Image (cartoon, rainbow, N blue to C red; front, side, top):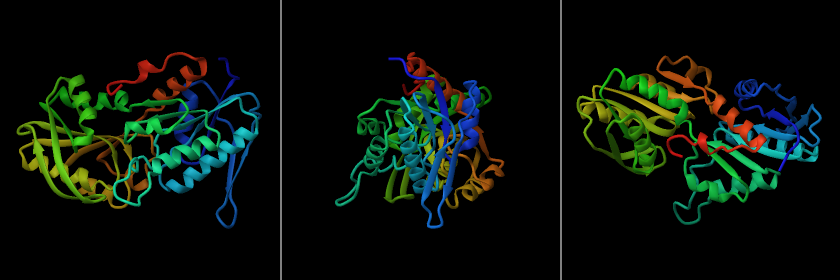
Length: 318
């Protein structure tokens, strides 16, 4: 099926990322005027004619999550009412993804709620990076293209393997498939940290399965939030004989004390992608490095628009 001409629009969460993405496609970023009423209500006006266009709305639902989510929903409503031909939501970071199942009685499945909201607002397709749980794709009744930042991040890990004897480490059992893919691609061994969590962001017990002694340990995860688990895992690896520890995470949420914890930890480096814009404190941290996935998403947008296959972009975990 042929759609109208391509148009890239951006919310307020990550305008610099959207500009890099548009530049990769040789496009000018569309004009979206966003303002708040005195009581906090979001008002949006699209400044370009998008009637009959194939529109891609770029917006990570990153902190403040609720603000950016509501902003995205209002932008989509404005776009649909402006008679866009198709609306693809591009959320490099999909907020609420950790709430993908009932963890106890009388609790919500908020990831499903967000999926419903996006579809009701008019999304015809979703493009995202490194969902916390892959099954979230099944919450949608529209096509979902789930890409992985590993295609950009793997180069950073490869530089370490050229100089050190590396072991890739999964910080928990849920991340084993991701870490195993890195280890297989790099031809290095795999270790796993077995942890027991009493409550969110708090670890009660941690032990390491695998040989890390005398090796450079690289922790691989999908996101780093408060960095409590990550920095504690790094310390445990050092205690078990790792000569050095770095971490590679797709999404640098870096909430609360995260940056200070990284700065004070044994971590050599924390490598994150630009799915979430870093705050000033994080940008000033010498241990934090950023790798861009704008080219990856730009290529995916080009292929979605032209009807070409996107499957070759599903690197490692794909």
